[in-house]
Amino acid sequence: MTFYDVLAAHSWEDIRKAILQKTDRDVRRALAKSKRDLQDLMALLSPAAEPYLETMAQISHHLTLKRFGRTIQLYVPLYLSNECHNICTYCGFSFTNKISRKTLTPEEIREEARAIKQMGFEHILLVTGEAPAIVDFAYLKEALREVRPLFANISMEVQPLQTEEYRALLREGLYGVYIYQETYNEQRYPVYHVKGIKRNFRFRLETPDRLGQAGAYKIGLGVLLGLEDWRTDAWFMGLHLDYLRRMYWKTRFSISFPRLRPAHGVEVNGSTISDRELVQLITAFRLFDENVELVLSTREPAELRDHLIPLGITTMSAASRTQPGGYAAEKKELEQFEVADHRSPQEVAQQIEKQGYQPVWKDWDAHISLALEQ
Image (cartoon, rainbow, N blue to C red; front, side):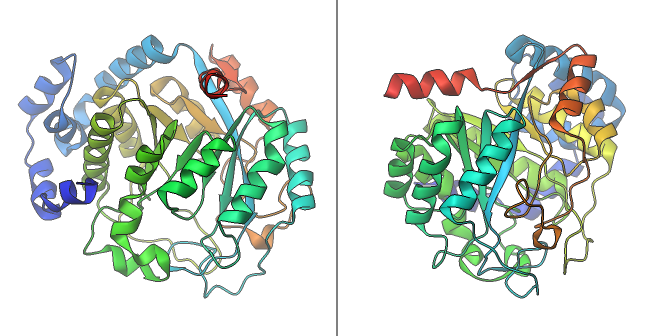
């Protein structure tokens, strides 16, 4: 059994209706609990929870301090390639978009890594489009070897791989993998994924299972907010998290909250989510799982990111460039999407400190876990 079997037992429309039918009483019951289940998550995501946003924020703040203290992990993405053989309606890397394509050479990877290291980062996220004929397993393995001497924590956000390939990358020093389903609505999924390997809904959905079987130290989940109904997608992501925690209990997990952003060849429309609803979503997940890492990227503007620091976020990117060669030699025409927070790492760190938190450049848990394996 995989999560696909679990998902198949639930109807998207039935869950959407159930969320909308949650009442004030359901919300108050969920808020009163010390341990919350999927029904409680449904209530906290519902419109009925909107009047309780301040209460949710206070509980979220308390739970986050208890588990993570006053710390915010900082990381930065390194885009290795914008080559992609998928046609996705929301992505600037989509195969049909007329942009310049670039895949970094080993020397260019080293140049980018050195530039990032000088910015102070110890946690790096390697990112590519999905072009297995160009950016294959061998390329990813070589890229990992190029950056490993410089960084204490290395994660990837790349095309789905097989279990044995993940095992091999973990032996090379890979710590975590972020794999976003974009939407859990299987019927609507092909509308956004027109062509390419990403069109295979089940193969992508089962990637966290393969990661768990490979022994990944951390698995990151996420949906693209702006495609389908955010409340329903978020509940299914909670269902996925609940399943993974039970199946792969030694693994750490994170949840990201990317909202659809402008990009070359992309029209931003669909199911919007307001800033207030984003706060509801973030705090609902903290109340659902006090141990999960909650990630916020530079897709969000600086002012909003600053306000969200005390409300449950544990991990933030800074100074992100969403194109290959973006740090050593910036080329904006290669971007995947436009970032909204353009501050330097030092400016982000200063704002974190201003709010009484400590910016953490190295994930000590990751460093210790990898050391024990070696």
